[in-house]
Length: 218
Ligand code: T5A
Image 1 (cartoon, rainbow, N blue to C red):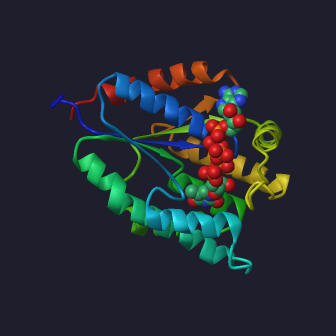
Image 2: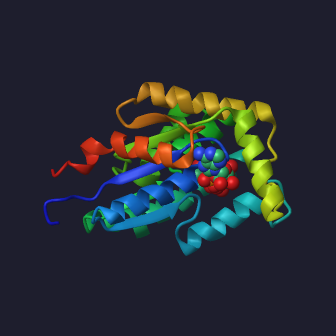
Image 3: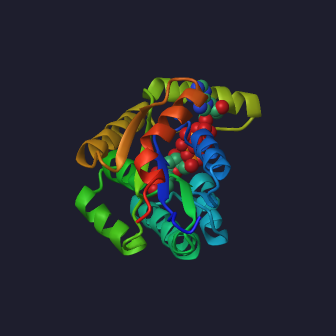
């Protein structure tokens, strides 16, 4: 399939909006369509990134991570992922499907924690350069429903809520509103998808929304 080029697709949304589920379903469809796909996630996706994820989610040092350090750790994980995984895959003509990317930092650290959006975006530019997603799916679900999903999953899997899931509901609402502000600003890249339908219906919608990208050759 020499006439096909790789594309960079990301999934975004609040906790439990179904990003991991939809990333997996999209990868399966792309592979069935003959594409070579790299599936990855943030924070993480490299050995360094997974160490950083552990620090961010579980705070093993016992110290309270200051908000500035948190933002830079997310960005450090991303820079490593772009350099080591995403950019090389795109250069080989492969597709990359990533569960969260820089919009998460804008939504959580800027809109959620109050850092200046413009300054945060300067850090994104430093971390990723020109490696920007071609399309981003914002899985849209009301915060109370998303938190119910996470509680249900934690109960089923007997896992404790992580540091982010324990944030106040008001924080998650700010993140939700932040995502919508980003989608309004960049509607060509960021497509808002109703995440409350059955998973297969959402996957169908995403597939349709990717038609122009799938058929793009140049
Ligand atoms: N973070 C991350 C930042 O603050 N800044 C950043 O820059 C970045 C990159 C990462 C945390 O870090 C923060 C955000 C996060 O708090 P994470 O594990 O990547 O954590 O993110 P989560 O959103 O918590 O990921 P989850 O895997 O927990 O949720 P998903 O991926 O959105 O949802 P998924 O697919 O795992 O599904 C959750 C549950 O819902 C069910 C699933 O079966 C599962 O039980 N489900 C559905 N139920 C009904 N209908 C559907 N359509 C469903 N789809 C899935």
